Image 1 (spheres, rainbow, N blue to C red):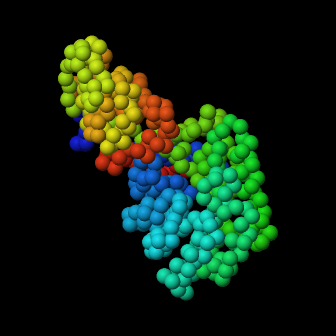
Image 2: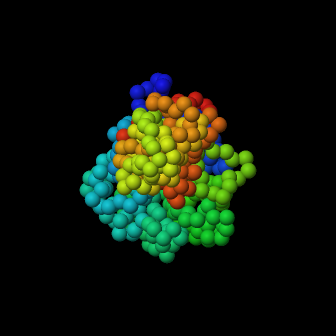
Length: 387
């Protein structure tokens, strides 16, 4: 029977020791004077933004990146007083909440700079200059001003008269995990042009940042004064192979429990639309996890799980709250047995990367999709282990 020390039938385990290890791998790839902005958007890639941020603070990280104002405000509400950069799209209607939470925006249009400055003047008249970052589009094709617009933007009255303080300049790499570095090198060159322009104007800010996880691992010339690790903090990457000497440890494992067992005869079907029909007498286990928990419906008749150290196939449609597996070849499988969705059991393992392969996507999506109704259980780490 299931002998876990906690009552949850389905849960994730977040190993903060692995997080600490991955942070040491970031630090080993960058100069000692280079800072780290840890990306904790999307609920820290599904790992739990508040606990992950608090752990990283204990590990010596003082700057964090989120995608939305709401994400940043939630960290503030939880007591996080570190620097929080809102890296995604923001609208003028969100400016009051952003300013109230003392978040730092990334501004990516000249007009947005003016509108934000006006809101700062309105809400905090006479206050010290509000920090902002500018984003330059060097080839991502998403948010950002062009290199040609940069000089005019930094010379705007909002920045010159002291309402705003240009704290950072940034861009984002679009193809840094490609074995062919040509496009990334062109982006780095474009960003270097932006740095030279700001230096000539005497406006180069304190924080200059370009490198994401792939940039940290493969492109030292992208490191500058600050790097933004995301997926590598959580133990994954999208490179063909990790550079020599680098190891990453998955932080998250995902487990559920056999809730019910039944035997079906050959010819019997399982789950909606009868997409699975047994070809033999089969032992079917029901798991209390489904697509509402983030276990993707595309894993129907495709996914694998671990039961008693063996792989078992998902059979039939994944339901909103339940998934069925065939445990005919897992001798002794019983109600209450732990079932691993992501992680290791005995000598076998299933990674988020392997699951992503079944879904024809990337580990990011698998991890981010794990629902909030799935409890997260945290294994602590010694802060000294992250240094």
